[in-house]
Length: 206
Length: 206
DNA sequence: TAGATTGTTAATCGATTAACAATC
DNA sequence: TAGATTGTTAATCGATTAACAATC
Image (cartoon, rainbow over all chains, first blue to last red; front, side, top):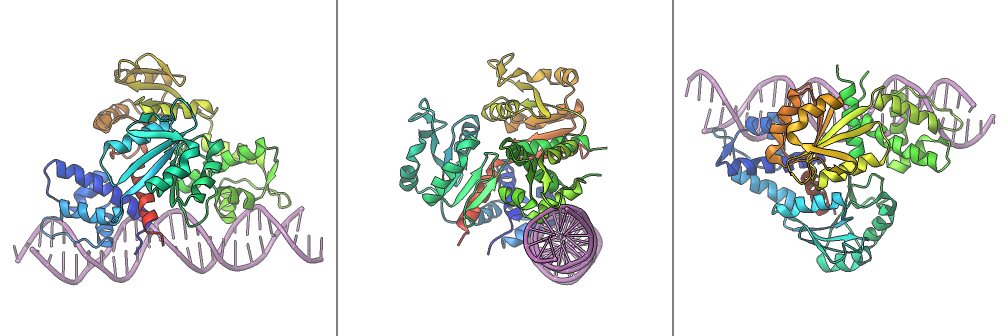
């Protein structure tokens, strides 16, 4: 059973809000509470939770601890996900330090760059290798996901290499559309588009 | 007339691909070419272009130069958009250097941080001020959009201040949901969610 | 109990795609 | 012309929301 993308996104948000509430000492939560903290609707929350087969109590809502665990079973599965990041510029560093702060099921296990200054240095707890070492490290560290934060010019070439070495998913921050075989999952994020979207709706808002 | 969010996103992508093709000396482009470069469908491209009221030629497709201009009229409007960025950590720097590289209609006109080391320094061509100067600079520079790349703990407090000073749109990279009045446009991006989504689909992919 | 809640189906809404006439 | 293309309506698909029975 595979869940819709939108539900997966929301489950990821639910989990962090739930952890947050748990830390504050809360043990139960109603769908309308969870919804209002995230600006979703209560029905949507209940429907998503229905989809993952968890049921709350009618009196007290959902048991936060249990719901977190159930979301974990769905999102994390049994396996730990190892990722690499390609391009240790500002964006690469931002993402890496973001991830190795929290303890999650996802770990950035190695970084790559072409800048000699960075090679073999440990940046935000991750060791940086020359980009020619991708194959070697992918095999060694059992990597399934790559985060691409490198300059667009080199992106397709690196992507081809990742595909050759059996990458399964790519999170692409280079603003160019990559040519990747169908069976590999690619998630694109383009910050220029985000920004232009905000500008558009700001200018068309009265 | 206000266009759907999804069309706006695609128009932003079209424009950059078109610029790219123009640079390569191409003058006309078919809907199927544009589509395949972006992994969209030709119908979708034609429909979006129809929505902005541009018509191509049946023989040669769209005139790239004209289409770029028409998309510009839609996305940029008449006005230049001035933005500020709050939080000059790695993510803030990444975004700023990304934007002031290209010449676009959107300009990051000032940055803010609390770190004394950064105050009054020029980072990626943008001067950094203490966060207490937000009101002053917003008035002075006619700011309509804020990019939030600061630590989540301080985010809501800063957001309240932005709202008080009349911000019109927010691009929110702090992973927490902000409490913002309805009439202000907020675009959230949460990289943990993106990453968890990739991991999920990678693990559920056979 | 009465009121508030969950779980779930059916209806609605919005976005994508199929189909095709018009045109060069 | 024949073939390829655009422009656009209608059909489809998918996601959200409304409605409501069941339950504590």
